[in-house]
Image 1 (cartoon, chains in turn yellow, cyan):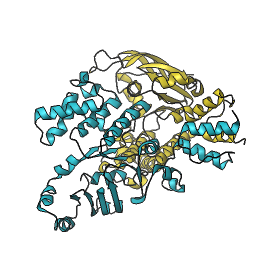
Image 2 (spheres, each protein chain N blue to C red):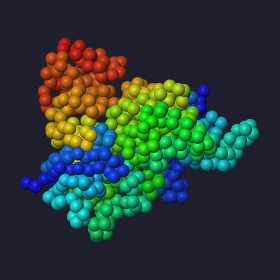
Image 3 (spheres, chains in turn orange, red):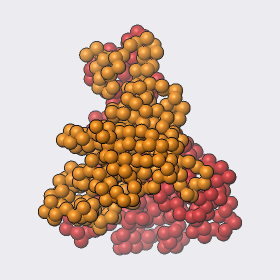
Image 4 (cartoon, chains in turn cyan, red):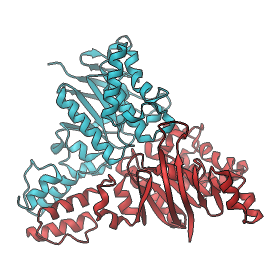
Length: 276
Length: 300
């Protein structure tokens, strides 16, 4: 089966940063339908990697394949129809003069029929809770609201691969939960949807299919969350946190209390501790 | 003694729009000098709007905000009324918004996106120069501020765009504190930073608070609230609903109502309580205390 993403020996550095290699010879692949959490501290190369994957930056060397399509200039149209990124700062992403116009912008570029477009704008603005704001201009919206609009704009496109680069960092906790739930529902509806989340939310990473940790432009660890987070010292040494549940589990097992591997959420852990 | 006060403050975005909504409704609030305040509430609750009245970026549609002797309102009649019995000096102060902006330093969400100068030093010098400082004086305070935020001298002549997210944010904050404001307002200072970046920024804010400044932070980060705030102000649907302490807030039943995230520690404690944990779970304030309590009960 072909992969959603295949990255081979990828290298990149910014012109402005002489002598700094932002991405160092990275190779990895992502299966179709996988939920991958990409974590690492600020400056580890996460956002640069996201931009390279979506061809918003040109690699220095190495190759990227998105659904078997080589990432390069001549495939740009197909790529834009396959993979999309929602970034952290919604101000840099708001293009339309209203919420409605902004969500419709990407659809217009894909020459989608007007009726269908209106339907999609309605559907996705409602899903992100912005359907009451369709005529509002960006100045009238909060950072979190603009972020919801950016998310709706990408989700409405029906892409096969979606990258969230800290896309919920401006939302309140309820908003974050709403969007997590929405992604979950979309993945349930369409199991082939590949989702890559660049996040500082270690709890979210713990519940993903696979975790990739970037450090200094290189992949430092990669694998199932429980394996990746197993080496607590290594994780904390690069300034990342350990998931709450794992931290308690580790401390308790050090004291001789064995806790089953399957326990991953605070609900499960509280059941176990209270003997339910 | 209060330093910032709002009186029947309301703000409406674009009254002419038939779908207009109130961003703030009848808010009466006092913030003490030297306090460490966190303002919390869900998206659209009015958090960012209220702090923007503190340096007159947004003018209250009704009522007013007062920062010491500076009155802020869009209601010209009201402002005239308020100033009527004030001294000539205060009347004069109120004519120039720069007097207020110098007092209230505002660090916006993702301030690093506002860095623009060719070098880090020039960027930080911009604010003080804007407030009328001479070149060499501005340079002096900029160097001091950069040292305060922990940016090494070898960086000063570099482009701000070469920095990491946390470093950029520290440079942006240096640009604000270079003007030596009495009040520092930060909108989501830890958003998008990794744990180390968060620690750096908050250590810096705490240092500023320890030097006697008033700190006002708008945030969704409840760990920040738990660890730093002395006073928590809760806004919900454009209204002020609570002025409280972090400990009281996280132990209150109202958290769900305001859609606030409980810190994971408290969430877990509440689950244990509900499931009949055979031990005392009151007065636990950190991870280690909780762990000790579990070990006691489980005899490990």
